Image 1 (cartoon, rainbow, N blue to C red):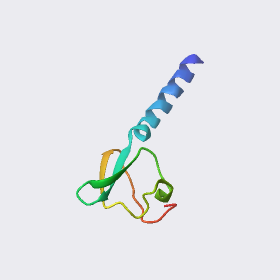
Image 2 (cartoon, rainbow, N blue to C red):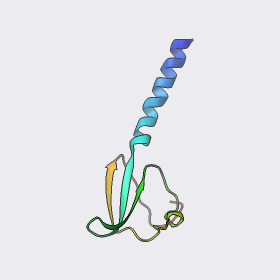
Image 3 (spheres, rainbow, N blue to C red):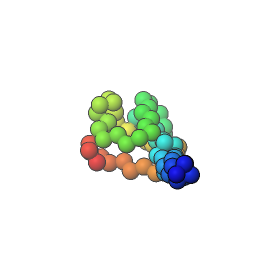
Length: 73
């Protein structure tokens, strides 16, 4: 039984690694300048972070991201 539990935990860790390592940085102005907002998880409303309708450039450090124009995807 311990081998099954160990295998299940190992598989769960492998599935979580891509999500944990995802990261994107939004910049207020073109050319990667101005205020910066970095996320490592889905954000459904940038207004809570003072960054709604302000991003003009972006760098994806890790993972795949989808950026939507309005809140709540």
